[in-house]
Length: 276
Image 1 (cartoon, one colour):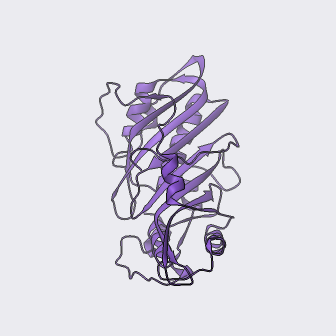
Image 2: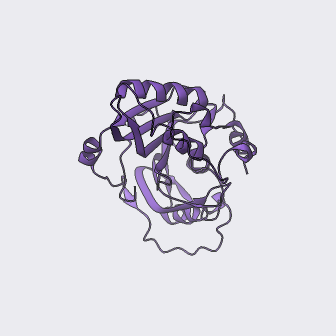
Image 3: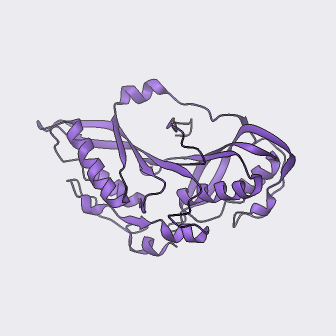
């Protein structure tokens, strides 16, 4: 377990406070997990963002009439802290019986509170249901590798030694899988996700990638660190000119978490998949 998570509300009974309480937000430093991967804040080999989408966002107008919307939050991948997910949910629930003059005032409040806990500016968009509905759902890019015939016998820890590539061939491609699963390191609840890999480098053996991704199935870690581990393992193997790894996780408690890590400073999309 991450040492800071022991003091978080995750896995504990909690009172649900319905009036604005920013102190509910709980930071978890990224440094411990970076250290596990041999990284520091100064040596991160990627750029990126963690997109959080909230489907249970509600507050009151000055008249007392409630509003519902969907919140999109973008937390920089190099921020000193992640925000513990249950504390995030409890904080958002504390808006339920809180009046705000208008939507920009609420957005400014969210930016201020979340940025203070993350340690870097957090992007906030409050989106109408009509806007999100009009976007619909999308498919991940490239080839889905889930129908490949593989044999798997170890699910406890990620196994980068399974990965294979053909160094004699340089390719540029996108592949994806919907078979990513890991467990919360505190509650052991399953985290279900889809993962996409886009790269230019030595040709990656697709079956070996699928076996590697399935090896996460009983692994316990946060969403962000799973994606960072995949990114680093592929970077070591492929020595790519460019590499992007991102995962879209199924929501829990009205929140989904979607980490993106890339060698490129790209404008990253935040489009829902069918399981989201």
